[in-house]
Image (cartoon, rainbow, N blue to C red; front, side):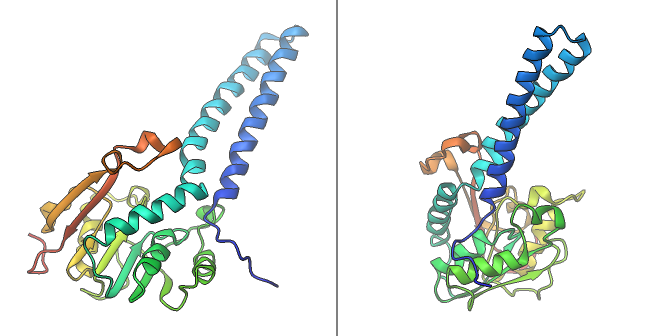
Length: 251
């Protein structure tokens, strides 16, 4: 069987969900109209109207979030600006880790931006997220398509207990992943980031300076001038970068 030649980051399934929501919503609107014209019971009209409202809200939400985030144009913009920011803090020599790699977007981007780097992507890849293109096999396929498979590997692991020795990586990144991890104290996540990092640690999360990170710089997406399109509601998000303390410990 011939492998796909087009890289896939989950856009098609999200477009199907958006289209299905809109289609069912239109059908519900028609049902409301028929119910009114044929003087159907009031409960039928209310039920149909409720379906319209729910589906419209869901469809709009999905269109401006999951659908927009996996749009190929959005992915390409992410790759460009992500790489630009990484070059400000890392020389590309050594090993890099992508926590919650999902479809491998960030890991593959790092591998392409830094030809001398060895990159590892780690994730749990639950069955539910597999429907959205987030699988270990999908990451490996995308890496082969982008021709970085010799420098980009993927392994299953938990962000709370990363399966790596202390100080293994010169660069640690994570994009849109930590908010999905259910844990009472999120500082545990940051501690793991600092444990496996060597010196330069780039993390798209907030408030790690108190853990011993130095030279922390935050730049919002709005300040970068990135054209967000449908994702302009996330303009408050941004890039948070910093370096691990010289003593290698949390302060």
